Length: 203
Image 1 (cartoon, rainbow, N blue to C red):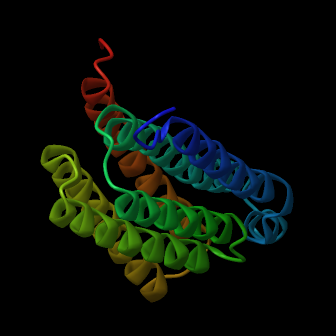
Image 2 (image 1 turned 180 degrees about the vertical axis):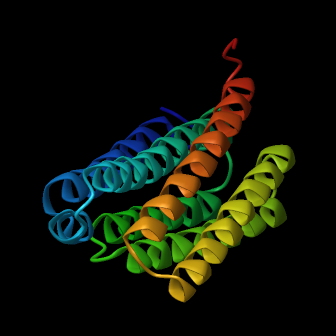
């Protein structure tokens, strides 16, 4: 009979559930996105329609992958390898649920400004999680790194949305999303490198 609680199965279940939820977010975006449908119906330029769709998809997909891989590595390190306490596990599980719900909201956005607004709220929650993680004893280097990149994405997304409010139109929408997609993809690559280092995966 085991004398200590094993988090192996709960961690696997939580990561799998998060994967299902964010999979729904991606599926809804690809099949039911009012934002993409409206833009494609009203924008006369084929190249802008292409740029708008692939930029927004890149943004959503990079976030889903970043948080899925980060959650898997962080939860396994915290609760399988180091056996952290149950309250911290419940805290991380609760935040993952919130992240999943917000990603579904992002995928169901009706227009570009709403898409960016949902992303801003997502990063606000991500920054809050990072601060709590740093205070509660999570790997200091990893938590600080995530705080920095989440804050960067929050600020960049908020600035782009503010500029788009001031200068709306088909071209600005596609261009701002393209710029954000490049930023998100770049940050994803840096985060992937950090995650691989923490997981002792050779790069």
